[in-house]
Image 1 (cartoon, helix red, strand yellow):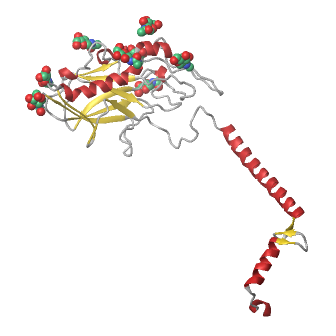
Image 2: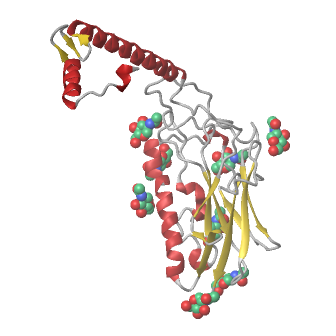
Image 3: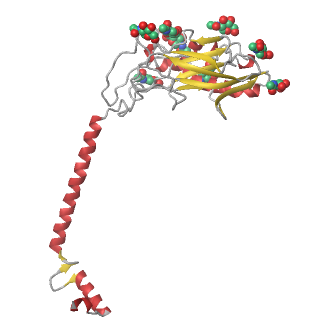
Length: 290
Ligand SMILES: *[C@@H]1O[C@H](CO)[C@@H](O)[C@H](O)[C@H]1NC(C)=O
Ligand SMILES: *[C@@H]1O[C@H](CO)[C@@H](O)[C@H](O)[C@H]1NC(C)=O
Ligand SMILES: *[C@@H]1O[C@H](CO)[C@@H](O)[C@H](O)[C@H]1NC(C)=O
Ligand SMILES: *[C@@H]1O[C@H](CO)[C@@H](O)[C@H](O)[C@H]1NC(C)=O
Ligand SMILES: *[C@@H]1O[C@H](CO)[C@@H](O)[C@H](O)[C@H]1NC(C)=O
Ligand SMILES: *[C@@H]1O[C@H](CO)[C@@H](O)[C@H](O)[C@H]1NC(C)=O
Ligand SMILES: *[C@@H]1O[C@H](CO)[C@@H](O)[C@H](O)[C@H]1NC(C)=O
Ligand SMILES: *[C@@H]1O[C@H](CO)[C@@H](O)[C@H](O)[C@H]1NC(C)=O
């Protein structure tokens, strides 16, 4: 008890501290001899080397189980998202609205389509991808082993979009009120939509009691051929380009807003997910003014 209450003067404290830092009687530095310090440092160096080693080993064995060719965690069976070009978002989602007699209202749509389709230029597709038109059924089954195991992809050229290729009609019909729209299905690795005989296909309809009128699809069978599926991923198929279906609306009622939905129909594709309005379908508003 006495020692507790014993008051030390300031100089005594400094002296005690000084002795703690360097005690010349015992040759101790901060309470340990130099030899002990060396041992303790070696101990910690060894300790951390082991920890780092174990961590690296764990990470390494995890990497071994991961394939760079496919995503590792897919928590549910996925259905592809669908996108539209031109992709102009208004207040209530996608909307395409223009006045035939005012080119500046539709020129942005036309230029969006041209730049989107430039990846599908025939010369480019010829140089990077293979013509698969003779193929039947799905793309061949393959397995990949790194690091640079790649395979060819099938070409999709803008010619396949006929009157919506932008080649014969560089305005895609916007100047005549018969606009082309392009439907694209997002990629899902290792996903084979449709079945051995029926490829996924596009079906556009008007909702809310509207009339879509006459519709022309390009390619005319409005389907995404099976040889574009499955997609094996960016590492395995670096040159892959998505197949497309173009929709040309030939007889839209002028000056009336229309709600349209384009669904992709086929086995393995659902379009009724209330949490994802772009799963398996794309909806948009359309208004053509004159
Ligand atoms: C694709 O072709 C169009 C017209 O044929 C041309 O204007 C455009 O520059 C080409 N784009 C590319 C990326 O080659
Ligand atoms: C692309 O290849 C096809 C067949 O090999 C050929 O007919 C066509 O002329 C080629 N097109 C271009 C632009 O190279
Ligand atoms: C991808 O395209 C390049 C040309 O841009 C070509 O050299 C390469 O072989 C292609 N890769 C595959 C896997 O086809
Ligand atoms: C493309 O358009 C032209 C005229 O605009 C038409 O005569 C032809 O039938 C169309 N082609 C197809 C495949 O519908
Ligand atoms: C493929 O699906 C279609 C309907 O989507 C069905 O009529 C056809 O019998 C199926 N074919 C096979 C081989 O399962
Ligand atoms: C649909 O048309 C494309 C392009 O013309 C063709 O490659 C494909 O085989 C056709 N698919 C069916 C099921 O007819
Ligand atoms: C809409 O207007 C255009 C241009 O005036 C005309 O060519 C077209 O026939 C009209 N469409 C309908 C469905 O009346
Ligand atoms: C479309 O543009 C023409 C010419 O500028 C104009 O007269 C007409 O009122 C416009 N239509 C609508 C519905 O705004």
